[in-house]
Structures are given as structure tokens and as C-alpha cells.
Image 1 (cartoon, rainbow over the protein chains, first blue to last red):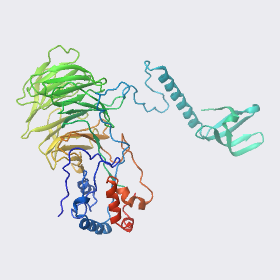
Image 2: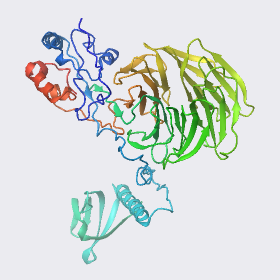
Image 3: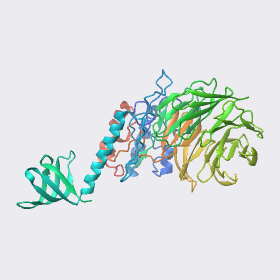
Image 4: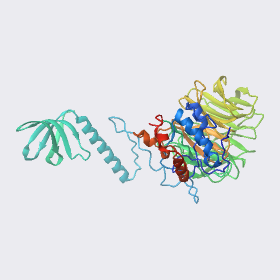
Length: 207
Length: 350
């Protein structure tokens, strides 16, 4: 029974699938070892290899044809390595780190609670940050107001003193158009319509 | 669709990594400190493994390292007979606490007011961090070098492990409450406040005891000598690593071995779950730390979930399954097979 070659390499690779530059032949040598053909999780775990180069051992023909025969009979899933965005950053090599503009200057944004704006307001924040926070809060409120409007009757004030009401459906991404239904116009009811944002002066609805 | 664990390797240390600890969850995320025999403990972002800084100052191997709950302070225990307290935001050394022998273990109380140390001088010491000039309180009783000392029961008690015993002490009276003997050397100890669980490893055994009574709850045997184990915050899994370079993941309730991973090039000295349980970190003789996903394939930190492709033929192609092989190997494998082999295996799909 062929033994799975073990790597005696010093610390280098083995970081996994990202980029694939360091790792070598991580494919588990199949066939002769036999335990890969199972496919149960525990058995598969046994086969999960470190960086092992099996192809260069000169046994490829025998092992591979055996594998092919097995694969045709008992096909096994080929596990995909989990993709990574990048590798963890290492030391910069010239300083001890702890850069002032590093991770600690901005706290992670808290997930906004539904209906609330609980956010840590730090009075020490520079004015730009406070302004950005305010902008973000106002934008969020506006978007939530649009969500709240869905399905409700809304009255629009258009140019030339025209007032119409309709049932609000949605807006597009840039809030350039309002999709409405049952639009009550002076000349009749329009089942579905798009109102241009540039035509609207104001709109209101009851919560 | 089966996904294979991609460990993230954190490099930077030049000697074995002997201890690691996570902070609590802070508004800035959570952090990881690693103790290394090269004397230069490092602070990393907990969910990505990105290096933040190195604490410079120790003159010997660092045997133990810990962070306080909000990751504002770090403490390290070293072979230069000192324990040091650091500002974990700036990296500056705040205090050097002189000992009479190698210091092995350090632990902050929840409020970061006190530091517990233990080492080869067989004494437990409690330092008041608000009074750095004052002498520490000392607790004696251990008959061999202390390997690990932890606060427990809301800092009212202390757990300490030496070579063959684990002892429970009362903080206020500084006296021993209980002790347990073992036949084999205790290699690691972890305390889980929720549920008052103590995780101990000795030989190939991973044992769970009550932190209050020290009574055994359950234990599992691993295939190899285990150096460290950690219990998931929700107590669903535990991970352990040791002398065979592999990491094992067990179901805590059934004891079933769920997964095992190779990847390290040397014995694993320490393994810990992150405070949110989404990943675990392992430190090894090979000088690296690796981060492993608890749920393989989930999008978290640097790991990015990829939805399976529609076309099963796509996935069956060598490129999809052999992403990690070097370019020339890909071509060689492709030329060896005919396409029909792969496309005829219906199981190889999303």
C-alpha cells in the first residue's frame, strides 16, 4: 500500500487556497490509500491534507488509473477550498506597529437597531465625522420612510398646483422615479404609473 | 456542496508559539495576542489575523500572554523572570513585575484591576494594578512549577494548575478550597465562565470539570497526546491539538470526532475559540498561528462564501476542484484525463 508522502518542509506554505501560490499538490492521494473513496465526513476528514505533493512521486500512472476506475464506480464530491479575500497581514518588518491611524481610531459601526438610531455619539469626534454620522442617520431615516410608504396612499403635489393621490409602490435606486398604482388624475384613474421625481414638488402620507 | 477548510496562516513569529489568548468583544472587534519563544509577543486583529503590533521589551521567551476584556491592556509572562503589563493600544510597556523565577502565566480580573501571575517559583501572585509599587499578595502551596493560573467565579476564586494537580483557591482568604490530582502532566487549562466549566488536557485526554467543585463532568480520548483544548462559547464543539500536528474538532455532547485538520508543521501548543465562536486559533511549534473556521464555508473575516455554480460540468473541471495546485500540475492533470470522465460523475456538482 502506497504511503501518503509527508512534507518535511520548513514553515512556508500551507496557508490554503488563497492564490494557490504557496501550496503544493494538496490533492489527497486517492486509490491505493483507499480511505478517500468513502465520502463520509469522518473519513474525508482523514484525507484532508496539508500541502502534499503526490504527483511527483512517480506513482501517478498506477495510482491515477486506479482512481479513475474508482471514480467511475463511486464518484465522490471534490471539496472546494473555501475562498479567501486575502491572507492575514504580517508585521511590516521595520516598526513595532500600533499605528495611530490603525484599527482603533474608528469603532466598528454598530448595526442600527430597527426603528432606532442608537449610535455611540462621541463628542470628541472631529466635525467631519459628526457630519458624516448625521448624514448617515438622515439617509437611513429617509430610506426607512420610503419603506414605510409601500402600499399606502400618498398625495403628491406636482407643478402648476396639481395634486394627485396614488398607492405607493417603490422608487428606483436613485429615487428618480416613483412607481405608483391607482393614480388619481384629473382626467381619470391610471392603473400603473411612473412619476418623475423632477415633476414632484412634495409628497405626504399618513403613517 | 462540500467545502474544504482553508486555514489562514499568521506569520511573523520566528520561534514556537506557546500561548495565545483572545480579548472580549469590543466596539473595535476582538483581538488576539500570541506568546512566542522569540520573546516578542504580538497583537493581532482577532477576526482577520492581521498584525497590529509587537510588544518589545522582554529579554527571554514569553511563555504566557493575555488581554484584558476590552483589549486595552495586555500582560505577558516571560523567562526573563518578569511579567509585564502593556498598553494594548499604543504598545507601550506600562509595568514590569519582577519575579524570582520564570513566569509562565498571567490573567487579568474582569475589571482589569488585578493581575494574577504564576510560574516556576511555585507561587501565585496577585498584583494590584492601581498600586504598582505595592508588594503583591502571594499564595503558596504548589509543590511544582505553576503552568496556568486563572481567575474564576467572578474573580472570587483562583484556579491554578501545576504539573500534577489543579487547585482551587479563595481570593479573599487566600487559602486552598479544593484540589484534584492527576497521574499525568496537565498540559492546559481553560475556564468557561458561563456554566463554570473547566477544560483540562493531560495525556490524550480532554477532560471537563466543574470549576466550582472540580468534580469531573466528562472526558474524551484523542488519537494523540493533546497539548491544548478549547470549548466553543455555546458548548456545541470543542477543538483540541497536540503532538501529531493535527487539530481535532469534537461534538461536545456526543464526543464524536467531527473533523480533523492537518496544516501545522509542528506540534500544536495552544488552541482557543474566538469570543464569538466563529473561528478558532492554533499556535504551533512551527512558529505560526492559524485561524480556522468553525463553520466551514461561511462568510466571515477573510473567508468569503461562494455560491455553487449552476452548471455541474463547470465544477467538474479540474480547475474548480484543484484550485490549490500549481499551474503546471493543473495542466498535467487535465491532459491525463479525458473530459468525459469528469462530466460523467453526477455527484460532482453543487
